[in-house]
Length: 373
Image (cartoon, rainbow, N blue to C red; front, side, top):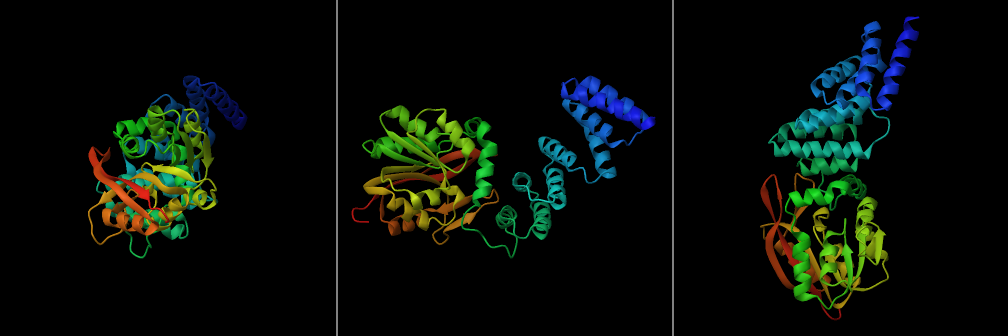
């Protein structure tokens, strides 16, 4: 009889929760818990109802209690990680995501991306040693996971080889998750790359109207140029389908293609007379092959305009930052452009955006494909 009462009360809690009546859901969850204080479904309903009522500390107390009694409750771990992240407790959030990864049967790329993000946030809080400790546990459990390896390389863990570009699936999932808030966040960061690319197109390439927008994202860069000249022909390529959906809503592209950039350039048959890439090469370390493929996809005397995040070094080529993105030296870009058959028209250092209220410097390059290259 006791079990039936508990089930009945908890089912009522579920019904009210599904109707978004969280006060009544909480009431019936408490009624069930009065009969059995560690009844798992009622504990979860109570914690979730408190969470939806924005009673976060009370909800968290119960979530923690649940994980101590029922450590296999991974959905609770995920909610706890989200709460810790919102409270800027990145270490605890990272540990919750790591617990999920270790205990899940299948690898979940979204959880891996979340863990990588928390570890980066820890480095911004000068908690590098703690971040490295967590990353080493991750690598030990997932020694072949590309996101774990990339994160470990970004944290400069000994014995981890630096990859030449970020894993495709990582980038795709990252931008799929970022798509809805992308333009709002970039506005907050005072993101300048689309403006800089457009200004250089107006200055050097207004007669180049068959344009490939490489890594077009939500279409910010394409929109800038389209507003200058609606008669252009824009082709957008991006790895994220959700970003392409945002770009399509702008009604400025003749064609939008879902593809990883190098794969597209290898298979494309159409030759453009201009290629633009705003803040795209930050996801590639080695740019030699990319520049050569761009040369194959553009006419003689065609113009390429792109931005890179830069650092000062005569000898270094590129480096992987703790953010997981790449920076390139000016000399490296100059050498690889020349090798691919381009001559630089202009290179200009500027602030690309702000991160943690600090300016992120980069270089905007404009180059022309040499005749016969």
